Length: 82
Image 1 (cartoon, rainbow, N blue to C red):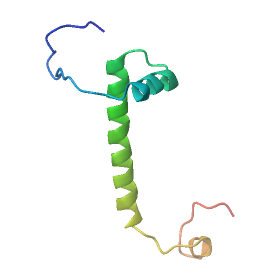
Image 2: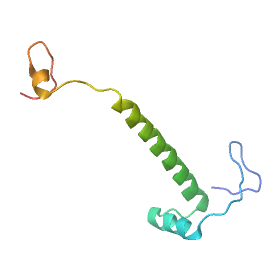
Image 3: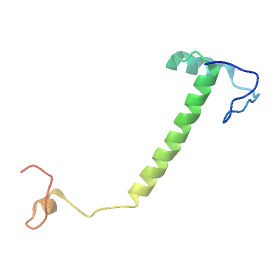
Image 4: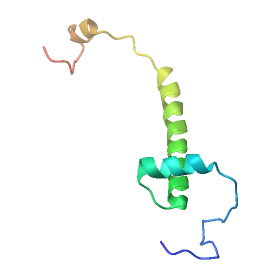
């Protein structure tokens, strides 16, 4: 990855304070060398976790009142083995 003083389109340059030990630990545990890559990976994982939690919350609202016996009853197609 080429580093430039001018951010590329879709990128922004920021200056922030980060816990040095936390950044070092994240780099060691992931094997990622670049600070930028470890931060971007962390942000992507955070967004994925939020999306996963949202999916689980939404899916939890969709309940089926089905049991294995009910699925095996006549007139109900079942994907369960006999």
